[in-house]
Length: 216
Image (tube, rainbow, N blue to C red):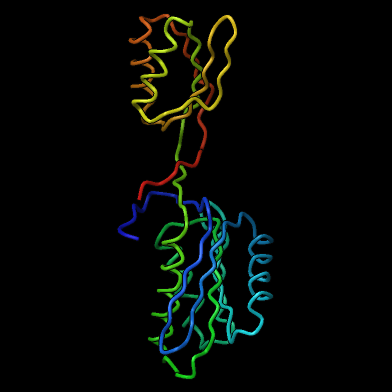
């Protein structure tokens, strides 16, 4: 997954699955977005039910923006060889509100402690490769009120910045609600004022947290 910025809070946008094989044992990872312990437990139980015939269904969860709840289970594997390594992958990647279950179908060969840790770790990493992940950012909500003469220039400017209005209203004036990273606040205000020759009315509605798709 590459090097992760320790300051980033990363959120699952869409879950995924991954599978590896180690000495004929199959390790199948299922990863889901879960915003509460109840959601996490329900997801774990759904996987257990689906793979009722597997030898193990090990799990790990990280709930809350500040890891308020972390929990893991070895589900019968030797202590510390499954749930803990799985949890460490999630916390190293700074992922929040996420639950992973790795199902193991035993292939007849014992892997040993180190082999189990590597297999469960790799299964989670494989699953994450097939997930969509976003970054929780500090943002600003800005209301732009402009006239029809300038709206084309404003929209062209926003497109070049990779931004789209989250809300638009066209009446006698054009009202556009924008959300962008807090560090862009001064630049956006200055440039929007310049391109409309000071005619646009800009109103900061407040600071918010929002999830932006990560460009991996």
